[in-house]
Amino acid sequence: MNYRYLPMTTEDKQEMLSFLGLSSVEELFADIPEAIRFQGSLQIPIALSEPETVRHFTKLARQNVDSSEYAYFLGAGIYDHYIPSTVNHVISRSEFYTAYTPYQPEISQGELQAIFEFQTMICELTGMEVANSSMYDGPTALAEAANLAVGGVAGKNVIVSKAVHPEAREILGVNAKAQGYEVIEIGCKGGVTDLEALEQAVNEQTAAVMVQYPNFFGAVEDLASLEKIAHQHKSLFVVSANPLALGVLQPPGAYNADIVVGEAQPFGIPMQLGGPSCGYFAVKEKLMRKIPGRIVGQTVDQEGRRGFVLTLQAREQHIRREKATSNICSNQALNALAASVAMTALGKRGVQEMARLNVQKTQYALRELAKLDNCQLVYHSPVFNEFVLKVPKSVGEVNRELLRKKIVGGYDLGRDYPELANHMLLAVTEARTKEEIDALVQGLGEIGRAN
Image 1 (tube, rainbow, N blue to C red):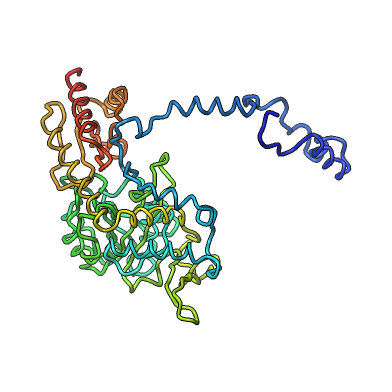
Image 2: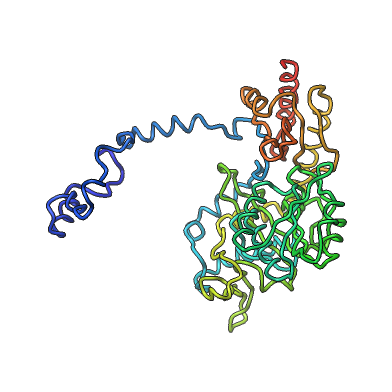
């Protein structure tokens, strides 16, 4: 037998044709004119046996590069972080791995409690009052925040910093076009949002001011100044925050943010070719009834025992479509669980220590790279675990040379910011060792001398 699964045998096919009263498969297409039917064979490879298929894809897989064998300095939204071993053990359990929407609380207490704990930890990290049960990812969470703002405030536009992730801004633009509001982008100065330009742009028509913290370049934005500008015309202040960075940075809630969104990927979710990940969405209590998706609430049963239920789910489009707050009708429960397990395993002190390691290793890399004659550190704002480096060649050329040294280099900023051609965004997480950072510095130095 060549295949593990046989979806249809010859006998199966003959039995179906006999039941339909047909003598051949061709008779199924008798109503389609002969002139428009496809003639000949499709240009696809012939089928392989199962052993041949496994061998073929194993050979292809060996061409991939991963962070277990290469020093990995690519970030730009998806990061190589430590994942506690307990994460995979818990999320691999069948009651979590195969679970769907927990509509029946009496049989879904485990999943509901896990989501409730996720919401609680997100609130603690962000300094906000309410969080939902998760979103698909950070960019769509940002877009949902804009939709909420425009729907609840008199403004007809949202203002977003160009220091927000380019892909998130693209998603925001798609949503804005469908919802009929305008997105105004504000430039950067010194790697952070241009405060003067922002102040000139904000007016009574502004529903929300949206920034990233730390921003796409790794720089820590001045949330105190941004908040004052955002609220001077009663716009909502929306912050897209890296949750791991909040282990060392003041949470956006401390700066009077109205909505805080972001990616939970740094906690317990592998890079896995760029996704899936898990978004989070947290708000002030006054916005609780406008928050997209669902919320898990804590209650007690008739005997006073602690229990969990879906709360405010009548706002979802599967129940009351005309009252729906968004089109989000599910969540990333499995990835939210992974993030919850990771945060629980690390604990408050562990999250802080992990965040501090990101800062310390980044600072070491900055000091060493500053010694190179051929590379230049572009911005000088405080950073978390990413920074911008100007390199002597195109980023593509530099990355190809680094790859030969078993180093995955940074993100080519010229793809999204034409003025930053030959500029690389490097990420240094707690997973990088001193030896790997030294190898990166040496590799970049050698590329410069070769040039």
